[in-house]
Structure formats: structure tokens, C-alpha cells
Length: 440
Image (cartoon, rainbow, N blue to C red; front, side):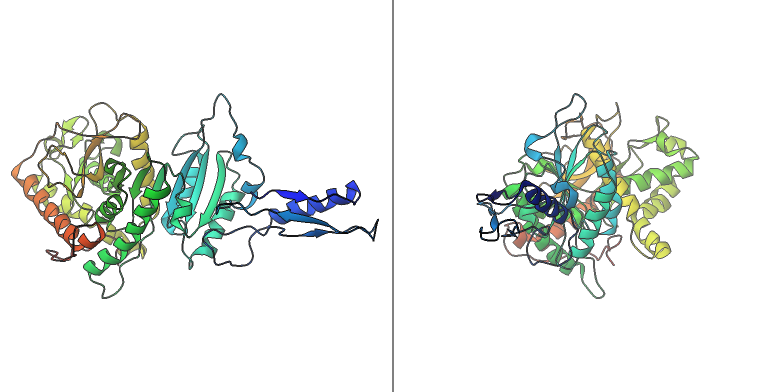
């Protein structure tokens, strides 16, 4: 925040106090006019003048606001006034504040997610958090509204809210980056076109993360096609470990658990060891071979194997499209919940014998899956933000055949975006148009 310097005062102290009070009131006012800059600045008294009637001959006292030497982002509303980031609170119960950046922050998914983050539901009730929200010129007014709602919610753990349209500012020092914003698929748009358009967005965001984010940043890519977008992002961030990037397939895992629980007549917490293999598309493979219900193999509990191979698999693959038909829009609340689940899986030790699904980089994987792509696989975590791939899984001919198909699709997507990951000219030969849930 800029520091005001006063010249030699000639006004009575009471007048200065009154003027200072007016400035603070002015600082806390909401934004009313749009400015074309990457971060929205609250109205501030710039070069304001304070005059006094006590001595009409004395020159007015000028308040000079020094501009920072380097371009600094500004926080939103009350967060600019009530919390001194340089003198961060240290208590026995609260941890050091973490920076969480969210793209697509004015969208429906974020509208559900941000308040979970700010309330302590995700990182815990003793974890202060700063939210850095990325939008676009078109969505900026809505982004202001989101920030105002966060401000009005009085979350004790929410220490800072920043909004902007420049990823190089919003991702500054980010320890978690939740990349939700992406262009939806429009009428008549080929999937190859969507890959290219969104790929350019995630290439730029990868470069921004590489330039300004924490070297330990964990990145969860939600915007579709999330696997290949995550690949593009990590390839454009060579200074950040590729292992830190995830494509969100947790919603697919949650949907698979739901269907298995319904069929078996049990509550969903009895279902474990569910893996989503491959792409977040209709080629994804919900694995019932390794899944368990009440600790028993699913195929022993659900003996209708035809249902597992056909109806169950198709229901999970097409659940997003079925929801759109009923709801008239793609899933938002359940997607936000799955993002929370994905984060918690990385910051909480995985229960003994269980695992979770995430789209991760395939280099060094033990399954024989092609390297150099982002592929959903079973993971375990010690709760330190890192993960390891599960080795004790089994395969049969059915599962291998399905995995091979989704692998081929991801390799084709990679060829399609070769120009965005530094591997030559992009060439699209997608085997089929496997529409992603919500693309339309």
C-alpha cells in the first residue's frame, strides 16, 4: 500500500484527524468505475489537498502518494485496511498464511468453491488464507461482486482478497493454483479447435506460474479438456516439478463410488479403492476390478458383471451429460466438492490400503502407460502435498483394453497441441469426437 507523506502541517490537529477519517472512509468504499488495468485498484486519494480556514495565507498541505517502484497488486476493500501483512499474526493455534490462486473465479464452480476455501473447510480451521482471483475483462464486474460477498461473509481465516485479469500478478507467490476458467465448446466447434483455444490459455498460465508462483506450487487443472490442458500447463512451466500438476478426475471417481454404492445397497463410505484411468472424457475407465465394497472385491459383492462392464461404465462416463439434460447446465456444486476432495487427498494422509484418482504426469509410471502425457491413475499421499503411484493393482484383459483406448486418445490430443508444448507442429488425428461432459 502506498505511504502518504505530509509536508509541514499548518492545520489544526482536529482538521487533520477529520481529513484522515475521510480518507479511510474513502479507502473502504466499493469500486464504482471500471479501469483498464490488470488489477482493480480501490479509489485512493491521489495527490489530494487538505486546506484549512484557520490560516488562509498558509499554503495547503499536499498529500503525496508515492507509487511503488515496481508494479504491485492491490487487495480488495476491507482487506486493505484491517490486516497488516508485514506484521502477520503469530498465535499458538494459527499457521502461516497460504496463497491460493483461482482462475475462472467469477464462474459457477468458483462460486461454490471459494466460500469453502475461505471458511476453513479445505485447509483446516487454523489455516489463514489469501485468495487471489483471476477473471477477464468481460467478467471483471462479476469478480468484484464475488470479492464483495467474500468481504461481507466475515470469514476469520480470510486474510486477503485480490482480484485481477493478469495471471502474472494473480499467481504471484501462489502455493496452490486452481485453474478452473476455460472456454466452453460452442455450436459447430470441433474438439480440435477447443484443444487449441483452451491450450493457448493454459500455455500462458503455465508461463505465468513458472515466472512468479512458488516453486512448490500445487496446480489442479479443472478447465476442459483438463488432462491435456494440464500437460500444456506443465510443459510451459519447466521450473516447477511436473509432478505438481494434476488434471481433475476426482468428480468421476465420486460418481463411480455413488453408482457402486447404489447397486450394492450400501452407503458410499463403504466403497474404496476406486480408480479412474485415463482421460476425463467418455473414454475414461472407471475401474471396478480393483475397487472394494466393505473391504471385499466389487465383483464378489456385485455379481452382475454385465452391469459392471456396460451400464456402470457408461453411467460414469456420461454422467455429466445426463446432468446437463436434467439441470440445463453443467455440474458446478459437485465439481467444487470434488476439487475440495482432491486437495484434501494431497494434504491428508491416505487411509491405509486405500487410494484416490488424479490425472498426473506418466513419466516413470509402473503400469506401462505411455510417458509424456497426463493420465488419471491411482495415487497415495502422506499428506505433504506430494503423492506416489499405487503399485499393488491388478489388470485383466477387459481393463487393459479400455486403458489402451483412453491412452490412444490422450496421445492423439498431445499431437494436436504439439505447437503449444514445444514439440513441433500440431497435427490433429483424434480417433473420434468423445465429447467431454459440459463441453457444449
